Image (cartoon, rainbow, N blue to C red; front, side, top):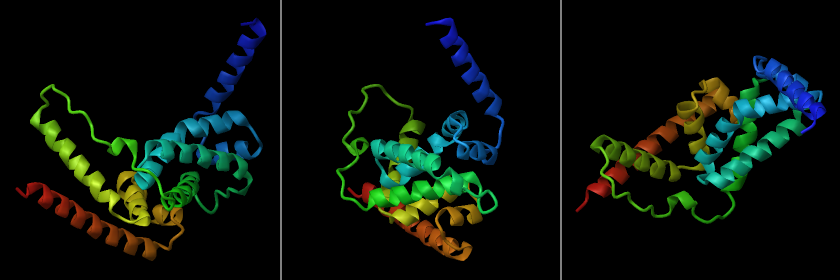
Length: 203
């Protein structure tokens, strides 16, 4: 590697480092000005949550990763349309991710690989881990039985910790409509978990 290349890489690193403390909105202004360093900082900061929310909807890790990539491609291409006076960046990003996820979820697909039968480990596991794993599987199975929008509401409010107002904006709903959707989703989730647990207890 030449000295010039090393100096160039160091300069890019310094510019990215200088932006790491910038707000999302400041970074978006830089992205709108086509500054790739700002875009990289945003991706590093928010890509994991974008993929996490997408996976809650489509229930497939590979699909969720594709959705995350596509969402940030849209962030880059539509940066000039972002208005911080209307919504926070995270709310805007969640809306992009949800729309992409809902579109993917409507398409027929094979069962996610991670739902395939797993080879059980021969190593003994603490009973607490077994119980926690069983509860997680029950929750995942129950989430899978909800509608796409119900999964989205649960994911944003309960799993990502958004306020009702921000979650409503991300889903393009009024606060009252989101509250109603979330209430139905909670009831449906509780019912499905109870059904799964009762089925498992049957002889």
